[in-house]
Length: 146
Image 1 (cartoon, rainbow, N blue to C red):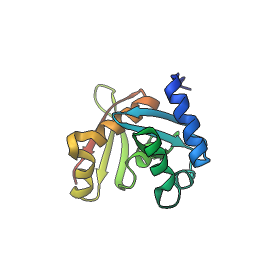
Image 2: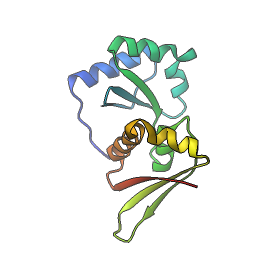
Image 3: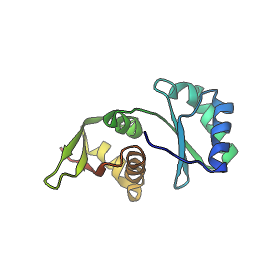
Image 4: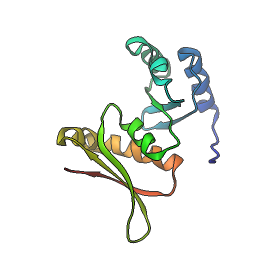
């Protein structure tokens, strides 16, 4: 079990998230100008609210982008949840010759792949930060082309 320490601002974000969405956050952390909140499986839709109203309200209150992701202990499930609404064809964990663990993600179309890789690879960096937070044994993430 990993142990995470939160500063006062993160604790305030937790409290504000729960008061706006009425869903407890399992974890939250900042990545660039975005705050990512993790909720239990099946609770993301409730947290987001009708037409995204809860997230829009929270975002305007804290002046940061807000993202809600369903947490999964399974690394493959976690990766799929973070890249949602993209739907990868496959997510595999492989060990290379140096015994490094690598996640290979393959998409059905080049268009989906580009969504993850464009904009200075901001979304890929976000994915790497999330995976590294919960699975320190993963050394790299590769986005494969069909």
